[in-house]
Image (cartoon, rainbow, N blue to C red; front, side, top):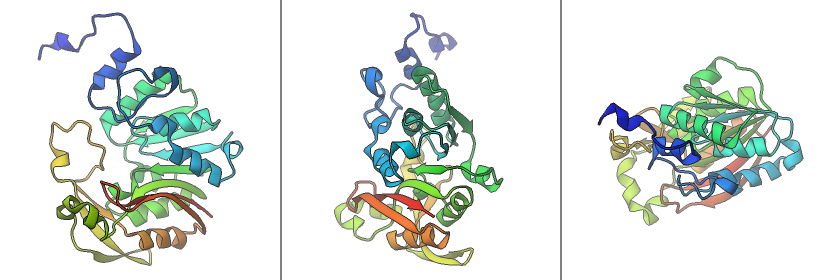
Length: 263
């Protein structure tokens, strides 16, 4: 590759910016940007987020609020929170390529009240960063080595969490047998007095160097909770009001659901 290949030799366009990560995008852009070539998943118009907002009282309850977002990926949900009127969104992304994609989206879509920080959000939460009105944690819990710790840390900074996550279920191997080699047997464990079982999940070939669209965690493995332990963990750390929707036991990447938990 010649260094000159990294230069753009046509006039400025939004597509030029998106093409810096050509072939790596997951999300389809919204509205007037929807014709641009990016990804295919409608994360900028995500019905799971709209449902979550309804569970806490609707759009009016988001307006003026301070949001913490863990793992924004490509800023789709960040965009939704800002569009719904949040006063500020602090979004923390560990994947450097995803972080740079968020900055591209911030520029293209004109996000004004969102700040993207590059780093590990677990380490950030361990520093006691203060309180937030809502914590948005979509697609991150099942990438954790210690998911119970993340739930505890979230409980320390917010009384409300929006979460979408996969969870371990033996039944998922019946419809998705190809998932079985990725998982180990359950290991009993304890975190701050909460006893639960963890199921180690290996990323395997997803970590290959040429897989630039990798959306996993920053370790070679993660630990999944089962459904019951996940809900009990939320309750153990103070989230008493739990609503569940978008449950998909036979999701091709593993059983999953959307959770809104409030203290």
